[in-house]
Length: 419
View (cartoon, rainbow, N blue to C red):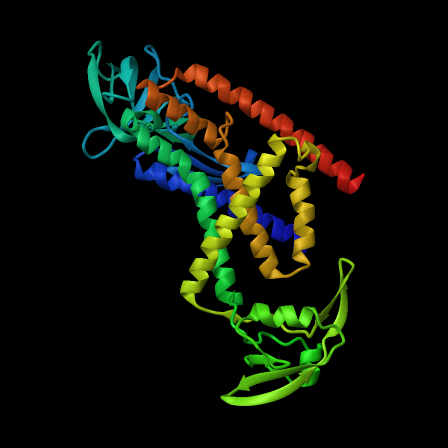
């Protein structure tokens, strides 16, 4: 159960922050965001606030932000339709009732002659209470249509994705992967603040309760000045001497509270990868500093970004087999292993997965954010966008291939771990 909860929390956080990036920058650009969804498939939870419906869906394989203009508008009103109209205080249409008009006794019934709820925002028609008199009704830019009891806000052209500048559209798409890197950076900072950042000072860190250092009387915070008469200037010097001295007595000269003390310590022998080394049961020293934590968070983010790119390079060059890729099942099994190692390892695992998700989405593959950005790059060069139908077909094919790849990877995971 702990693994299930950890997996749900990590996956939910990765998807939430990714989609939140899209959502925030789309809203900043003035785009109408109809839905903010975690998961795909049937709705499990739904709550509407303002213009946006927030949903959790059944299949935990991603998420999306549904922006106006990205898909065909849900409601089409044609000449000849009989619709009901309700008005706001400025006498503009703020509700357009498509059916079940009897539930709105105060609405004004109109037979549509002409309608434009995207650009000029008007409805022209013949009201039932005005015989053969054609009237024009201005429509509020925040008006809603009501179809079978479901309200949907109209999307004037200036609220649609395609109406925004190339820079605004690109930023709304790029912001998703960007937030995955930001999330990883923040998590690495939190880990560094809580655990401390390793330093190279010759100062003893945490002493294990069953090690040679504890038996000899060494304490956390002792500063090592010399070992067997050899001057010590860094933690690396301490580690090097101890590793090469299994079962050999070492005379530590340490500074404790401005007092110089001599303490003999005999490292315990341990076999690591066939090599005999000495250990005394002391962790490396750490420093808990906000500036050090920020620096450490940045370095860790850069390091793991490079490591993931190295993995992709091996995949492309054939050094890394597709059978070694992991999908949701493989990630769940790995999460189960990490959970047993403690909360800090789990946080680090989540940060690494976040970087991986960010990089994956930036790959120039149709249906991914990187594929969208690639089309924007072509638009910037051509000076005009690519035909929406052609672009949509490319993204559809890309999505189908990605789903096929996910099925293959998931089946490989199931065979590897459960069969």
